[in-house]
Structures are given as C-alpha cells and as structure tokens.
Image (cartoon, rainbow, N blue to C red; front, top):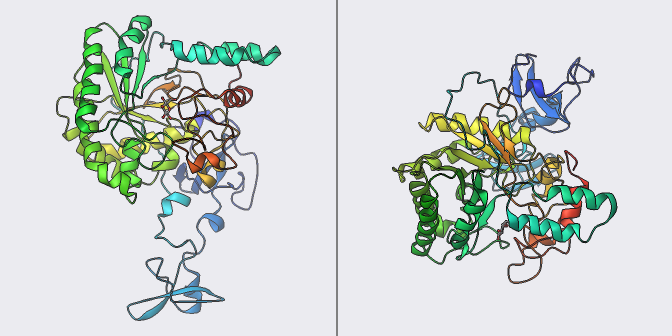
Length: 458
Ligand code: BGC
C-alpha cells in the first residue's frame, strides 16, 4: 500500500499483524473504507491501518444466484419466506430479497461505506482563517458554568476541572434576546476571535424534541439576524466567526420523511440564505454553514452539495468560508476530515470551490463512533470525553482543508432531557447519561464524565 493518503503520517504502527485479510495487516472490525489501492480497501481502527474484511463487508452480493434466482432490485414487498430467505416477485419472476434489507430500501452507504479519501496534494490556497493566528475568545458564561462544577469537586479532579475554565467555546445565540448580548461579548473579546452560533431558525430541531423552538416566523428570524448583523458591523475591527444553524442542512437532506421538517424546508432555505447573504458580506466576519457530521451525511455528499449550491445561489451578496461539522456530536477528527475531503470534492463538482472546515472537538476525545453508529444516541452519550483544545489548524500538511478545532458545543451544557416540556425519548435511552437537565443547561455529572475521559488530559 502507498502511504500517500491525507491520513498517512498520522498513523505510525504499520505492517504489524498478518491476518486472513492481508499478509501484513489485521482485518478491520468495521467496514468503513478510508483508502483504496491496488491491494484493496483499507480502514483505520485505533489509529492503525487495517484491511477491510471482504467476506464480512462485501458478502456475496446475491446468495440466491446459487439457487438459480437473481436478487430483487428493491427490498420489498416480501411475498414469501422460506428457509432460504425472503422472496419477492419482479417482472413475473421470483427474486430473492437481499440480506441487507431490513424493511426499507437500503442505502448501502449507511452500513457499508465504499467512499474513499485519496490524496489531494494541491488544494488552491485561500486567505488565512480567523483562527490562524491570535487567540480565541473564552466565553465568561462558560467560565461561570465550569466554576460551578469546580466548587463541587475536590482533590485532583478539582484541579483538573479548574484548568477547563478558560477554554474557548462558542457563544450560542439561541433565544430572541440573544442578539442583545453580542456587543458585550465582542467588547470582552477585544482582538481575540469570537465565535457565535446562530441557532434560532423557525422550527428549529425539526426532527427531535430536545432543542425545539426558534423564531415563530421568517420575519422574526430576519429581525434576529439583522440585530446581530448591526452589532457585528459596529465592531469593524473585530475578528468574528459565525456558524449558521447546526443540524438544519442535515435535516433537509435526511429528514424529509418527517412532516415537521418537510413543511419548513422552503423557509429553512430562505433563512439560511438570508443569514449568509448578510454576514457573508462583512469583512470582519467569516461564515461557516453547519454540515452535520461524518456519521450522519457520509454517503449523502452529492445531495448535500447540491443543496448548498442552491442556498448559496439564493445569497448572491454573501460568501461563506466553509462548513462546521460534528457540532454537539462525538465523531473522531480523522473521520470528520475524511468527510470534509469528500464534501469538498462533491462541492467542486457543482462549482462551489475552495471551501474550508472547522470541526467541533469539544466531546470527541474518546472514539465512541462504533457505539454511536449502533444507537445514534446524540443526547449526552455515555463514555465521551473532552477532545482536542480549540486552535487553528495544527496539521496543515495532512489536513489542508481544516481551519480549526473548536469547542462549538460548550461541553457539559446538556443536549436535552428525558423530562419536561421538551422531553426527548433519545435522552431516556440507557446510553444517554441519566439526570440531564433541559438542552443548554449545565449538567455537572456530564462535566465530570467528560473531564475523567478527557483526551488530551487536563
Ligand atoms: C440547546 C441550546 C444551547 C446549545 C448550547 C443546544 O442543544 O438547544 O439552547 O444554547 O445547545 O449548549
């Protein structure tokens, strides 16, 4: 294998283990493909290369062929079941229902991903990001929240906790009065880069309960954007980063079977375009549109890129710097970066060029991606830890498309609760830490979990 992928130099242990998959490498446990070469498909597990297990990941495409039948082109309807499996009828002939059907039409990309990340040595260079030099603003609200936990702890853990306090986090503008707080933050930030999250889109969090809310109509939303915009304009010497509406784009791509999301898709496009058009016209602001995360939108890069193109075309006066990913999620950096590279390519195909990415590293210190893939529990997932500290791209050679690691979700602010007006069933699952308060409120027990599992340690 050639070590020419963008990930290559990150992984040091190579050629360690013969296996049934490869003479020098172990079999991967999972089926995520990071790289393909003349030998076959490669994955990355525990930061080491492994060889994709063909018999597991590419089982004989159709076991019914051995019986003299072809496989059905869709997953149903099932007409008959016997010891050989499930059967359907197509063009008046029996066909076997493929094994990977579970009642719905399979998107092979969700369980068996075959996309690859190959070297792109020469991405055109772009202007520096606002993260590339200087400091990032540490939000006083977060400092206070951490301090409340420091006060409850003792000994070593207390000392570690106090080191979390000044870590930069984004300021979420998640309620109608939030624009009134922007000036205070910019004044306190001075020459440091301040990061704001726009999070008040009408029918916010359309596919879940935990963060439902937002403006009651598009006009109110535009007023909210205008207020923030006017304050940004009056701080013309500031370095401001804006992340536009976490989850909205992702829900437009994958949640359209939910009536709540489908009804508002048109308004959501207009709202995103309005934001971009406004903020993207200011020189002191760099705008990132939120683009979900790798475990959500891998396999949907083309649909995502087409939608982005449509939205950008509706915002002719505004330019975006790129995209945020992994907001409030737990995916490891390598997987996020591989997704960035694929989305970049998909965007290039539709004429959206030179995009850059920031990744939320607030809670991805432990690689819980396998556990997450099984249950998709996004609410205060157990086992997680603080991840890399916010900083401008620390590895431009291997991750040329990355602008920064950033703590976009203030870690230990809750993702949601199983109780109360916005009770969400996902927060009641056994792999969601119990006792959580409402989304956005401080969750001391989660703070302790993140701190104990922090990687790097505090
Ligand atoms: C909540 C917001 C909160 C944000 C940051 C979201 O899940 O809905 O209210 O500001 O997280 O903690």
